[in-house]
Image 1 (cartoon, rainbow, N blue to C red):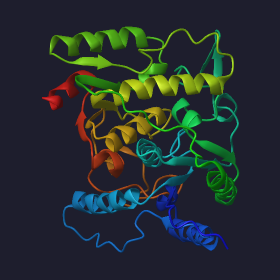
Image 2 (cartoon, rainbow, N blue to C red):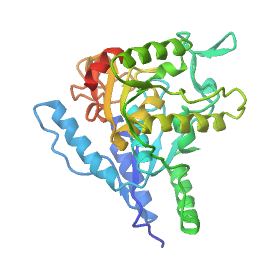
Image 3 (cartoon, rainbow, N blue to C red):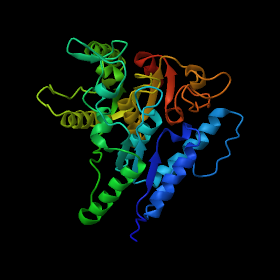
Length: 350
């Protein structure tokens, strides 16, 4: 049997929050290893997890993940919706992180219909698709956000289906030497440039918002750049995937030419951050940018997310992280997270 000792498959998803989720992870690992693929999996190293300061436990987990990511060349991610209609933000962070390393991204979902079809309570408002709060649905004709749709090979099915797709590409790599959809291109970094990663890119008042923030940053010696700044009118691109690639490439050029990121971690159609933002956070950390984030509700996750009585279990039976952090440990361990907005977050750049 052919083995692939040069590969390192990172398995990601919200399974760590599921009851018996680790058993599922280990079954997936054994299946990949059966086919000769080395696997690096989060928290496969025995960890103590007994620190009195709960944040120290989070850093123990995160530091282990840093070591795992060093050995990873590809990722298979579970894109199931999690606490809303966005996949788990930590999983998307890991995808962006590995993309910044030049790794190959694979993912699976049981439902790859477009967002307008699979998201609950959407309706038309004029010619716009909006959610139950009247907020514009940013990518109604894609199954996932542009960052994921453009960077990742996604299959409708389960882990086994994604693994088979990965294995086909491993054979193609043996024949042609390449299998990733795209690899990062690192332009010259501009010292005072700050990338503002925000879900407001999909709001109707985005133009006013970014000019207001841009002006505030400029007065204080920073160049604020935003998703879409370097994009012309995309109305002539009818194919949503071609449009997603155009958006993704343009935003990555801006992000990777910046020295810092200021990211909006507010929940987007649920309790998870916007997936474009989560991906960009992972890229920023992987590329070595200074990482700042803000959230309008700075309470720790256990206080912010509805749970059952005194437990750490949400309404769906999933574990809520309890590390005294206001966001998933992926963000909490490598971002300086402030309660506030893009304006108040500027203070952390000094």
